[in-house]
Length: 293
Image 1 (cartoon, rainbow, N blue to C red):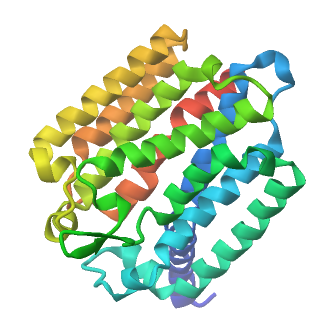
Image 2: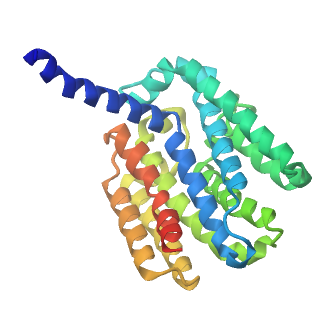
């Protein structure tokens, strides 16, 4: 056997694995999987109603994939320098692939939306859809400049947490014809957890947001203050979970994972820390709950 070929094979394998990991993370497939897992876990709020509705889970997966990839292919974002970000550089190189993925996700989401009668809930779903889609579009003129919704001071994290929790909790409630009031505890818990984690990503984007004049928690409070706020929201999420009767082991594991990510967050951290580890925290409570059931 050619020794050079045998030495090259492991390197080639690692390169292939790295490219596959980049594709899963930077195309938002990993994040969409987290949204789908949280949606599946939400169905267990009503254990007597027949279990998880896989079509609703698929709808949330497709819709999340659509929203995040549409955001990734916005024209003005591809005129911005990658500035050392492997994630942004990957997305700029694969813009057409991301656009195709968004198109496929739109077809899938549209199919489930129409086939399963979700159009009946359009008055409730339309505001969430509009907010998700115009989040990054600079449509509103303010102080002589067109700005996106995400640029409203401190609104960015609350908006993401609100839409995320409303979709992953609200859609299961609608599918089961249950009043959302029955799941307010779960809704509040998930909102607080997602809000805590969005602050981690604001730390990642600190320099860019400061230059753009976007007043996020780290811009306003500094990194230490932002971490303190994130830990406070995490504590609120864990308290709400305890009051809901969530098993202590699941709460402890979620709290440890989220707290570690918050405390270790720094702008200089790699893209894998944020895209794999920080986003992965969203999977912890959902997977633990589903496995426990």
